[in-house]
Image 1 (cartoon, rainbow, N blue to C red):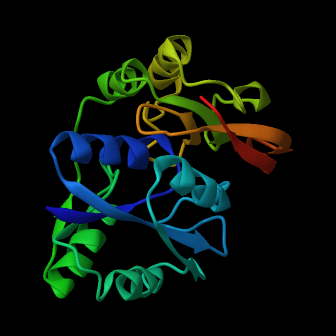
Image 2 (tube, rainbow, N blue to C red; image 1 turned 180 degrees about the vertical axis):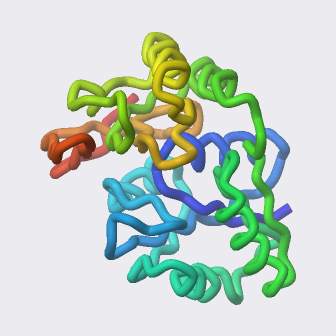
Length: 223
């Protein structure tokens, strides 16, 4: 099975690649869309340019394309990059978003390829724990929901953080996996990596009740 992976550098797209390779599938390339707006309905935007370094760490080719990030029309940009690839299907890290699922499936149907979502409707706290126990090391780089504060930015997604997210879900009703856009992550290391992503310079940007950790400079280092 030859597949392309929709890739943001976050925990769910990374774990989907890991699962696909466990199935024995051939992940032929990574596909990243770079939104020009921060409120894209489909595509992760925080530190998306780091997918270039992460692709190098994963030793996989990266196909990338700018997109205005306009609702619905941004799907045309995804279709254009997938068209003509020698693949049987596409994998993505969607967990519960019907918006993402239906639109990716629509594109795949049009291109006569399959859409695979290995994380779809998995138990979300267990999914976070599985990612941690598999050896993936992620940090939180964006928070956009009630209950988060600036201290969450840069926080490692370890068991203590998973427990804190669980408590925040019970108190504020957030999606513990961040599927509703409550938070975004960046993977620094894991079992797929030949090198680790090292962050050299970061800036916290906080506005009212949300913020991001912007990575200004990073490099790959030995594991």
